[in-house]
Image (spheres, rainbow, N blue to C red):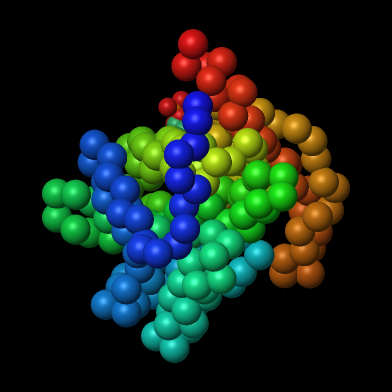
Length: 192
Ligand SMILES: CC(C)(COP(=O)(O)OP(=O)(O)OC[C@H]1O[C@@H](n2cnc3c(N)ncnc32)[C@H](O)[C@@H]1OP(=O)(O)O)[C@@H](O)C(=O)NCCC(=O)NCCS
């Protein structure tokens, strides 16, 4: 796979899948962001508490927009193509241009779980990573017990590579974190 132009952050890229549109998150999304990241089920496996106010939703919006501004990652809002409903977010972050890797992450609102949306979104992000960012490796850290995330990553072809013992501290407790990785060569082999 040859990369013709490495993504240059001139314009936020809109991606489309069969059922989803992945686009930049906008100030008009803050109410949806509050509902989404205010849901304890959405943040239960990350190093964060549910947000409670519009101010906090605005902070998250600025934080997620900051990846693009700093040119070291992108966080897309995920909306349904049919009706424009905001159902989650996904991103490629911490782009390391020396070693050509980045981290991937996704969250979907609980009413939309188990309908294949996360898998659909991640497949598109992975493709974007190879084709537009010229990545050689994509990785993810998943807290022990987050079976849904592990399954999604495995469906997309990621391999579990190791465990970082007690890597996450949340609510005064330590949790083991599993490291997952997908190489460009794994991806090509899967397609062959
Ligand atoms: C992880 C998450 C994004 C999965 O979203 P989703 O849209 O429901 O995932 P999909 O529908 O694409 O499911 C993919 C696979 O995972 C399986 N799966 C989904 N939820 C599961 C669960 N709770 N336990 C076990 N497997 C699960 C599905 O059955 C499917 O596998 P299958 O095709 O073999 O049946 C969603 O649960 C979520 O947002 N969780 C909270 C946020 C989070 O933890 N994000 C990850 C942090 S990096």
